[in-house]
Image (cartoon, rainbow, N blue to C red; front, side):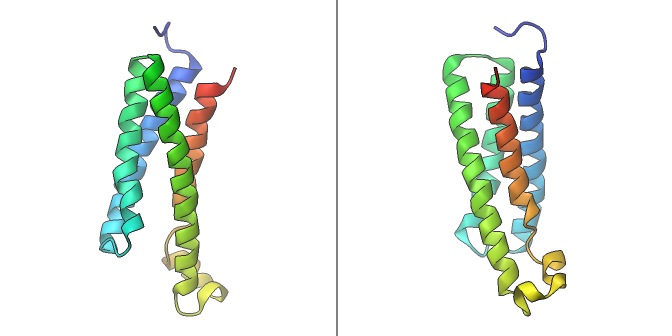
Length: 130
């Protein structure tokens, strides 16, 4: 059982809130692009699961939920790295490719999927830091 609000608990609940906010943004961006590639569904479906898992573990500290949340965070980390790869490739597919600075401004945001990875790492640090 949780005793008060230790930093670990606050960070875990923060990661849940962050995943919920990322869900909103990624859903808007990918729906704007009409989900042209199947992989666009990964963060749209994954971030709410991560948000709920973080909230559940933040309020119910049980071992099976800890391991489930940990596994989901590792998947979220990989998903974000894959998204950064796909977004970087997408910038290169635009007219002028990587040589046009404008493509980095109006093309797929490379940093947004990396934020998903970063928040996943933050959650993992909260779980395993001793």
